Structure formats: C-alpha cells, structure tokens
Image 1 (cartoon, rainbow, N blue to C red):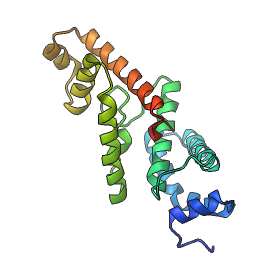
Image 2: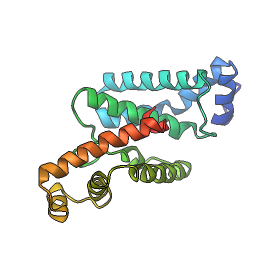
Image 3: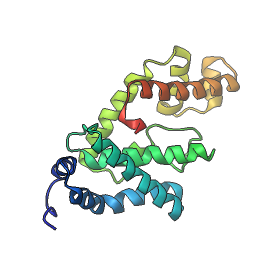
Image 4: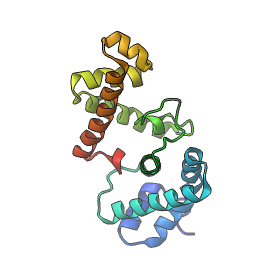
Length: 194
C-alpha cells in the first residue's frame, strides 16, 4: 500500500480530501489496539464488534463534517470515542463497565489505561486539567462530594462523616454531580462526549 509509512495526521487529511483508502489504512493500523481496549471492558465479542463499528461510524461522520481538530492525535481521539460508546452501552443496559473498583461512572477510566503511550499521557494531562476546570462549575456541595470520592478515594460513609450529611444525601449529591458534569461537558461540546 502506498500509505503504509505515512503519519496518521496525513492519512486523516487525505481522507478528508476524499481518499477513501486512507481511512482503511488508519483502521487497519489501529484496529487491534482499539478492539482490544473495547473487549477488555465488555468481555463479549459481539458487543465489542458492534462498539468497534460504531466507533468508526462516529469517526467517519466527524471527519466528513469537518469537525476533527485533534492536531495529529488520531489514536487517543478514537480511543476516547470508543470509551464513551462503552460507557453508553453500559448505561443503556443499566450495568457498569469493568473500569475500576468504584460503582459509579468515572470520567477518568480511559485515562488509567496502561497501554497509553507518551503522546497519550500529554493528552491525558490536558483532559484531566479540562475536567478539573469543569468540576469547578458544579455547585459547592456536589463538587465537594465528587472531589472526595474521585480524587481522595473516600467511601460514602467517610464522605458522610466529613460533611455531616447522611450517606443517602452524599450518594444523591454524587449522582447529581455526575449528571451535571455530563450536562456541562455537553454544553461545552467537549470531545469526551463524542
């Protein structure tokens, strides 16, 4: 193939300009890593196949409408899309993915994937900074519970003791914090939701 050694960013650019074969090379280049990531969360080949297909449908739509602005960070961008589709799948089925030991949606779960390379670590830091800024927009009581749970890794019993509210109130605040965080992410049109 004529594009075998060409960088992702050039392949993306060529695909946007109408070269369909450029996308095929990108898919072949990264399919193992993306599929493995999806499968490691859902543990079901059929579901993993569906999410993999949906990931690339979203990639194609985004590229076709000219909404791609990842500046050469194609793989981490596609990984975030697949991560969000995995979350959506579990949400629709009222189950939680096997990302970590917590029982609530963790926006950082894709960021803890050990297979990320140096380039991805830079993106991870950027996303983490963006998310911290978004958390600042939450009401104080919700921000407090979310910070204690995700960053300080406190149990809801510990949060209840520290804040002087019941465990149910702490759980409720966490739930609303996550709902509101998703709304804020949507409002800002952040790539994490793609």
